Length: 326
Ligand SMILES: [Mg+2]
Image 1: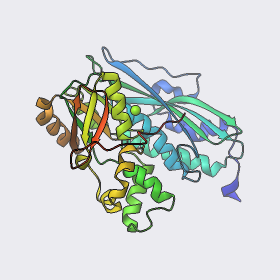
Image 2: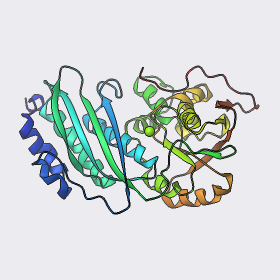
Image 3: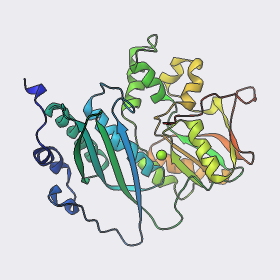
Image 4: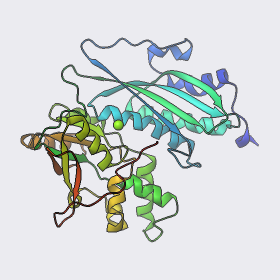
């Protein structure tokens, strides 16, 4: 049965499925021990590693092409959050012994599709075996212009707080994929699941806002938790209006009872950034050019912590502030 055929040995698998992805001349077709890059003069090299464990960061039966694409995209999203442009990526792929060739082929096809979409080649990596679930560790390399790096630290009192796109779709998508939200029309459930499986790294937006923003990051662990990270790094606090947080039509259709899940659940991969209020017109022009909507959701205050204000004005008590592994 072809579909159940075990994957080939390490060197054949690399030659067959990964060498074709190593299109950068400095990767030498994966025939050497490492890759060589010539950084452009005065550019900063920006590095990020994120690992995905199947069954922890994904559902156990997620399609391998979608797992591959998400693993790459979550790293690109971090580069986007710093206004950096991707140069390439390293892949450490750790697979159980019973992995089929069909799984590997579909995984590599997912990477190939996204490499084309984002113009980011495989530079090298490692393929090894585990008694545990498939684990995909990707290190993305990017470059940023010279000058002050865009960091979590840098938000100032009275700065406005912005997010890109819509918030909470992926958290609701995970619910939908687990068979919840059954009352929601199929097209909405499909949209939310798609947002969970295929985040859209906001690379063009990140580059466009970088010169104007005071602090920025991508939202991976939930809006409230990640805004808390910006506040902690910037030694300040924030107030955001629940009613101002942008929701997709599908999230709106899911109803108000999921409002807190939307702002504390993870996997948005939208951008969260702060800027002086005077920069708002420039930011909006940058966002239009990048083709991604941005929404002002609140402002930075001196008092530490993140407060989410209800439409009436009072702060909403939050039990969970965001995703934590430990
Ligand atoms: Mg991040």
